[in-house]
Length: 313
Image 1 (cartoon, rainbow, N blue to C red):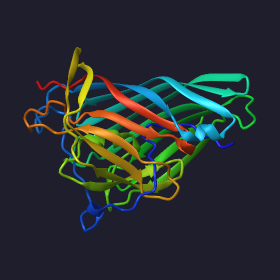
Image 2 (image 1 turned 90 degrees about the vertical axis):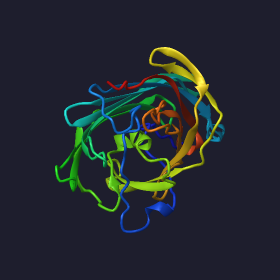
Image 3 (image 1 turned 60 degrees about the horizontal axis):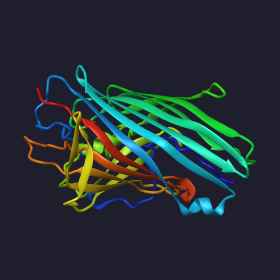
């Protein structure tokens, strides 16, 4: 039986062709701070916290195996702060996983936490990042859970041309250091920035691409992004700045995929449509994210539960 752990909410995904907007001499995507209500005006104090419920939708792949898996009690949280000349973006995912194999039941809690520092610039150039992954999978004989426990640190040179990673297998204490070169064809991002970067793209852009280093496969990958047509008239409910909120929020479905072979499935994020530049009420917030799991096991669905937005001051 093949089983694969969830490595991360942003461990992107699937094979796709190069998108049309990625051709030509200048392939760089630039960003604006659409997470502000007044785009272009930086407030004195910046802290934004978003919390998502994470639900599991079973897939057809589970019916072909002699075991079942269930994910419950999932929570995903992001925090964005602006410090002296750079941003800090932190994420945390916790979710309970239960395997049933014959008459045996195995339960554990999977966790993924990360942070990334990046420059307060139109290219969101990364400075450093850190990630901790602790996930569980069922052994091939169904006897026990195996633990995948990794720590990953990435540092970038000040000229933004090179970087290095240190991957530690905490179960064995094995360390693997890898230097890498940053390709200059596309805007380069750290993997831990990707969800936030979707909010910083102008929604007049139909498609584009980023370069991202993948430490587990030790290659720089091309991440393709494609904006669908605006969806209007759908109502959403969440807590906004401590107050219950229910209203229509227009959004764009955004597909995210890896331009590579055998890379999984496409993720889809719903990004709130940009409002007036001086009154961007919903700050291009991610309202929902669908992340398919490997082997058609199912999909994790992230839905916005609460948003403490940045207040301009």
